[in-house]
Length: 282
Image (cartoon, rainbow, N blue to C red):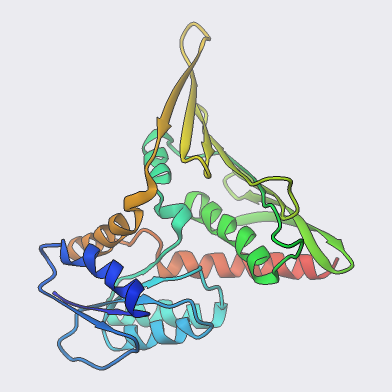
């Protein structure tokens, strides 16, 4: 399989090391811009630019399996086109939604059947006492994507209440209830005294408490004697990027969905747009 890695040179070289380890890959080409090559099979786009979805769409229309490494872009109209193009071209598309790709998340998926509750608490210490609007949006949309990946896209009810001081967003409270009665919530503050990022997931047999910053997970269960047992796990995020590459090519080989698909991104964008409409009313 011939693969192109497109992006800034230093960054592309780091990703090349991951790709070259794979037996399925016979040739790797590095470039700073998209190019036409009839011999290509797949492309990894390292692109955080506002135009990255258009480049992704161009790659898909060229018949290339595509992995976009960036913040999760959520322009609904283009994602709709990308999803349709990917289906028509029969190519696999993966987005680097790191909350879904992290080793801790992958391990948690083996511990839980189907969560009925997800609670996220995130506090961010401000830099220079300023709030970046793009960063603020990224904080909460990434969590919505996490909810979608775990609970699906059938949201029965959603509620979004921002904390706005002189039109500056300092916090956000989200509550989503899904058609299957599962519930997800987010409490976000970007004016914390320190950095906190915690996800709690539970089904009817286990509760998982995940500290994102420390990369630790605690699993709580209750035995037949009604005693609580706790299992602790520590994760090393060092190899996350390499693992995501392996999974991308495995999905191509086995013809299975990628870790975070164009459909996942599209469903997330639809929910995010509805939440934004609520937020803008405040």
